[in-house]
Image (cartoon, rainbow, N blue to C red; front, side, top):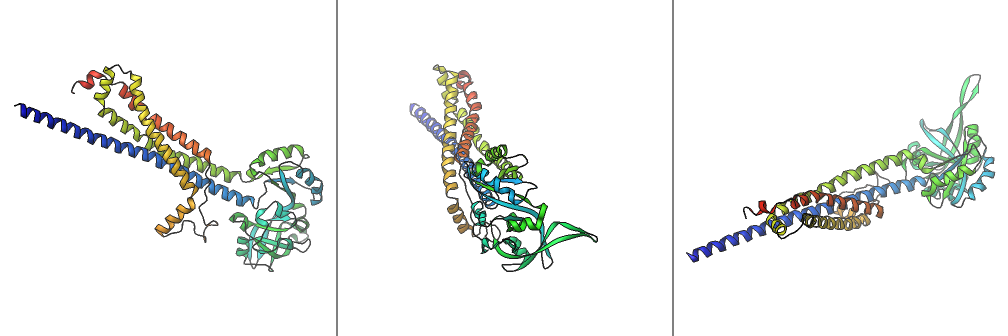
Length: 418
């Protein structure tokens, strides 16, 4: 009888140990999944925001290769009026260079093809100082724009649409016309194409034409808007510099910065970034709340241990702290791994995309379709810090309910069937 009783006891103990080991392994597996989910969510959000920042920076830089950091407009004034304005603007401590311009809307025509364009009159000697995209043309030369020779430089897409090259002639039609007894006759002028530029931004390559500033003023007359293009040391300071220049320049002078001219585009990009941040943060939230199921299973498995601790005098807040620390540690571990993985991928996005293209046999950004042939990335550490903090806070919040339930466990109820 003693032998059979000891055999039965050993079998029961072995069974209990086996079941406990299985439960512990399963809880560890769930804990690993929760940590991995947080890490992948954090890494994905860092990579996506870095790529969106890279695209924004790439497009912005290409825009500013053609646009001005700041524009100073003098409506209704001739080009000669800029001679007194330009030195005062150039004296601002954050201004690097200035260049005069005159612009107006027009139509260009060639062999029945007509396009609406923005014609900008420039000074070829000063323009490259404020426009990086125009410092070198893909064909022709910028200094070919000579006063009263009526030469014109076209964007690449505009030249392709009109099917013209250097040496070809096109007709420029002014927006206003000449009033005569027979009616309003449009003013036409034949221009010779002397160059083609490529800024890398489709909108400007397809809708911008350059002529000499004196030719623009002579042809467009009072329709031409004259002003100064201003380049700054730091383009991010453009709104502040614009306000300062507006305060110190005479009344009637209009000052605007690059963010104002493209505010709709940049506002749309910011909305997209916010929505993408929210969507991917929900993924992190789902992964963080996997901690809830893991902690609930842990509390259920450790009911007797919790009851014994309570019987020995452990306070409710001590029991709660144990599970909060456990969940917070898993969340912290996931955030650290996710930040490291996301920063590593974002900093080496070119190599990662090359590997993906080699494995799957396709090109992410074909050169024939997009103006860029690589995936840009701009890793910003403030974004990384914000993502990490929010992910950790979500993980911490996910531990509160199971920890509270563990602290409310009654020892007598938990040990009744033990």
